[in-house]
Image 1 (cartoon, rainbow, N blue to C red):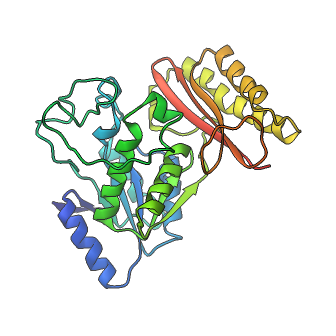
Image 2 (cartoon, helix red, strand yellow; image 1 turned 180 degrees about the vertical axis):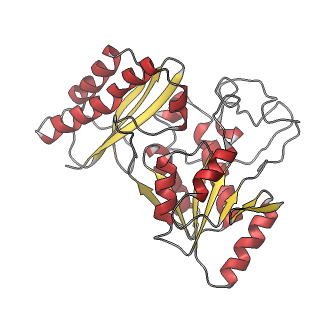
Length: 309
């Protein structure tokens, strides 16, 4: 199905999405894709505005991907406001040409993607004996950090992004670097599988108080949000220390961990890794990134900061 809403074409069928993309390409148009899970904020909107600088046409996908959630995670409570998202997209300077909003991008033998149960290595797409079977994995880059604490997450991300690339056939796709490991994984997948797509990453967009914009921020209480400001504050302190000559990663990590824990956050991980390989380093000798995941109440937040020395 497809419909227009204030000049924005909304397509829900993947075959219609393919047809639109092919017809636009036949007219020599280039296409940019901004993949999202909806609940759009200014970080998403900045990517969408930037997309106009890289292509003739802009497609925004809105799809909450069940395959990247484990049964114990927050798929059922993930924030969603499609009507609000469309209003925001209609207000973007230059507009959006297509919103691709599929109801389902997988074939599986259950009534709902949430009808699942299982262990940590099972996603909300799967049910014993009847499930989607084909996955894309970027094996080394997905192992640490978020991949360690969320075992099905990155295979779900890589698989659905590959599906979106096959359906929309973009020339360029834009991602925020707040999800740093995800961005690196998508870049590697595109390289390794010979997708003819330019993958661009853009700096994290922050609220005025420094908190990285995230769809999950709406679930923070005022007190939890105040405590969560320790993430960006600690990352900035560690970067400043490195720029002043502190290159020992253990000491830099301690700066981050101590501040977040003192604020009441529960660390999932704190790592300092080489920017492209994501290999953990003990001493800074080349560009690195500090990656953080921490819980504040029931909300898991991620953030990072690059150090280019």
